[in-house]
Length: 328
Image 1 (cartoon, one colour):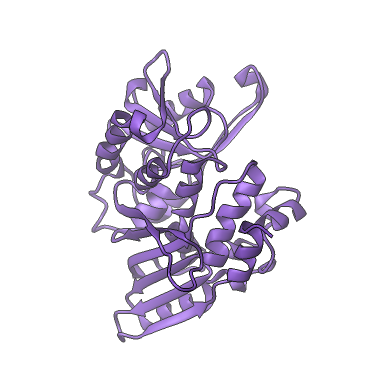
Image 2 (cartoon, rainbow, N blue to C red; image 1 turned 60 degrees about the vertical axis):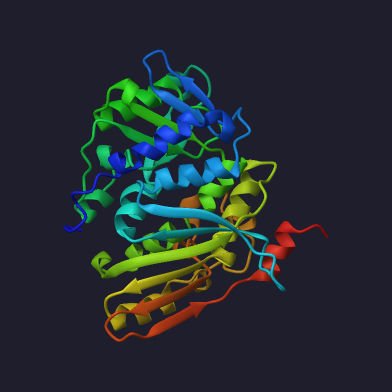
């Protein structure tokens, strides 16, 4: 990552953060400021939010290094009418150093004065704090005086968690923006489905592939309607990627292209073929008990710069998506 280490994901995302705040009314998000000046963008807790807000937050999540758009596909036999499309030319930095939800942020009920809080933080501020071992492996640390974090949670963060983020990132309170996107909200559904490429990069890393092999990544996944509760929403957004997500990776070597085409798709995992919400329930709502290989796109196309050959693996599961999302 030496060629991209000079890039600041927080600096690159700063104009997008400003747009999110300045266009709050149009995007149907609420702006809440703490007494110390930290900005909380409510994109679905009390605010209605919007697809456009979700797209912008997804771009912020990628540290300003990703292109995220919505596409409508009413063709002869569509997998689904709406898709989220993602592209990154600095995929390791955009997806793993920024977008990946890897920062565990929690507080006890005693600390909050109410009920306990837990969220996995994602977005560019992660690269300021560097609290995850992943950053040592990436050899990347951002240095900037402003930061943005995204929390996929159904309530606004308590002050004790905000203080932890400020301390770990070394930021003044007024220089931190936190966007909150519940999974069951419109914006939350969008920003989770927009992780289709990030999921592929993370599994590539888990498979032990040298991340310097990855040159370019693009992908898409169907955008389901939000669900009425958190578990069902989590099921829908994961199903969108596991059974409807497609990625195209460009890599340097032929051996890596073959390996990823064969091993990247979600069909390699135990539990494949069942709705994610059912799998989640069967493991007592413990993510860490689920086969990690399941968190992957349904289909992978991998092109080798060495040979010019493209390899393909996996398949879409339209029947499962139809059974989960359409009226019967």
